[in-house]
Image 1: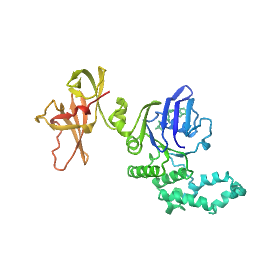
Image 2: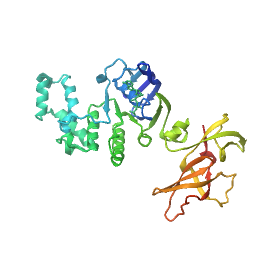
Image 3: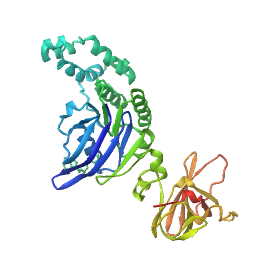
Image 4: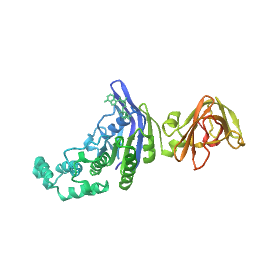
Length: 376
Ligand code: ATP
């Protein structure tokens, strides 16, 4: 059973509290990401689940089993680290077979009679029992490394080494797979393809996976749900779409995707919309709020740029006047930096070939739908 539940977990190192009252409920088969900036406590949370750290207080359950007092090697968790932690003097097959070999040594098995040294020696001579051989080759096939079984891991590329590390964790059939920044050492292109590989394997095997990353794009593109952490607290848990469309704080709006964040004062209500005013803008929003001071969140792709002389019905949409200070052509989109009062708003517009790009210094009108103006 691979569900993971954490109740009121805190972790202190001396008088520094790294984790404050963490609660998590991760379902069996779920791909769950812990996302947050450096030092927010992602790795410490993971290490407590794995059993490499003891929480100062609180409870951890894997399946129905409470595990704080159970040693790491009995928790049935597979780990994949940023540094692959492979044995460089062993080939791919041996790296993956290693833990399986040791595990079977401890089980009731006729080969156990050989003793550990005899067993390891016979392993190095390639005399693996058929069950181990088959299992390792099956998992290597899964990560598309069956043709590299006899290569030394030191001779492999970073992506291949990471796939060996993944195979080594998976071959043990863990209840939970814990991955700590597993893609950080790979270049951009490889990261992309490894994201797909990991996600596909996770879905095929249905293995509960907890994935630590500081890269929001990675978390958002891979996970079923994401917990955003900040300074040892979990600040929001949700699906990627939830977090993107309904961030609960400016921190999340800024950390998950790109946001324009403006300070506003609520003026009142008009035709069912909340009217909010700030330096250089007056906007109407579908968000209901009882607050007077709010943060106004507008995603760059929710803003349209129109020529300054365009005639726009102010009742239909919000209109803000501004001046283009920079336009950047990014292939499928054009990103504008637009000065509005004291703010520089980021605006992403889809670019179609031959379309006019507003130049620097140009006066423009920005339009934003009422439901795209979020008040926090
Ligand atoms: P990163 O993305 O940089 O790895 P993180 O979110 O994983 O960061 P943690 O490694 O969990 O963060 O660390 C959380 C906080 O706890 C940090 O301030 C860190 O310095 C502190 N910390 C972690 N381990 C220890 C330790 N063994 N002793 C003292 N402080 C620690």
